[in-house]
Length: 287
Image (cartoon, rainbow, N blue to C red):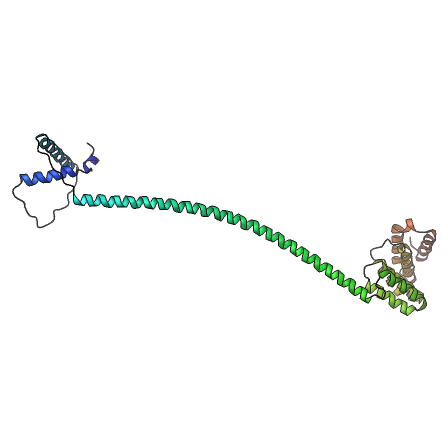
């Protein structure tokens, strides 16, 4: 027999052992002090095992002789069994509760993941909408500014049109040079960065050159030629610039202007303009 088998519940055998001890003993010794703790070693365990076997044989013999042994349950054991049953039910209840909680946690985790995905998608859509809104606002502001500028130009313009303002200024400068110059300045101020404003620049150069101011004329021609425009007048105005530079004792700059004429406008220039270019080149002593 294994040593661990000695500790199995033997309620019936222990009860019989108590009855036999009462029947076979006529004197009970009262103890006034607790017994010392039993030191369980191999010898004591083997002795206990032999005693249990004797009790088992005694119970078997009494049952065979027709004297059955009545075994009453131990109240403490019964109470302990009841407590164990209660604890077992509570444990099952706790297990069921834990399972329900785990299920709820899984559902909540899934819902949380879905909410996070939805929030991310909504955030992306919101950022896109904000970007489109900012673009629309910028475009609306630019359009409003352009309309405001056009309205201001129209309000400041005598005729409401750049071409009409330029035509009126060209006519005026032939009969009233100072008034015409002022009208040309208004074209430049009211219609900046237009073909009309560039033409107004070189026409101012013609007017001041006619009055004998070559330096002012050179400045006006240079402003008209910013970016080297491709208008029909650009080649002629370039030669006027070169001639004015030569007249103001700047031959190197005059030769540079003639080089731009040759590179940009000579192919489309008339024979008269090419002849003028040759004379200016000779006067400036260009190589």
